[in-house]
Image (cartoon, rainbow, N blue to C red; front, side, top):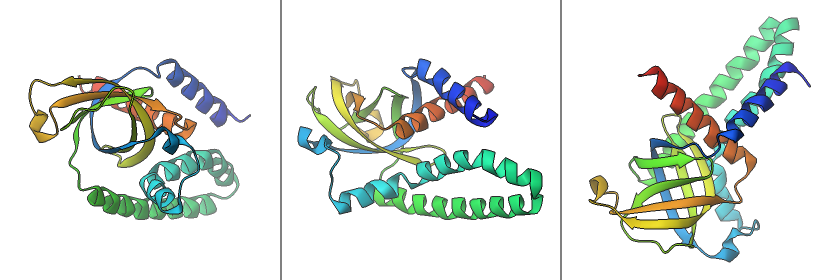
Length: 202
């Protein structure tokens, strides 16, 4: 195993130990109630397209991380080729950013306050949701505009003291259900990055 992959795994393992560390953050979030049956992996083509559009940026970043050790090997023997491949990657990232801009505008949502961790998320809603119900979540993490899709089960629903700037008077806390390791890693990386930024700003 090369040094990059070993360090990558060590980083993820360290993050897993803090998987329930949570941060207050801003994100674009949408959800809908679903049935237990809809937790099953077999979904229709149209639904899968929606998921793919939302999570494209996250998948791009995952592929780029996998490409790093290969690019380093290429750079050692052919710097010009490595530079060319890097420029292609940058062009693809620009296209991905434009794509995510369209996705976010299509959600027609403004950022709202959330509390996020690898185990779950809490947010505010205009209507109460019964504990135990299942939600389908579409979340865009800021400022990276990385989209994640996940199912979650409502743990608590409490009445907030005010309307939280129009986003809702009910605080909903949920636990993620059956999320993939890629999604969990994306959340962990985001949480750790935001924590680091917060510490540097102190």
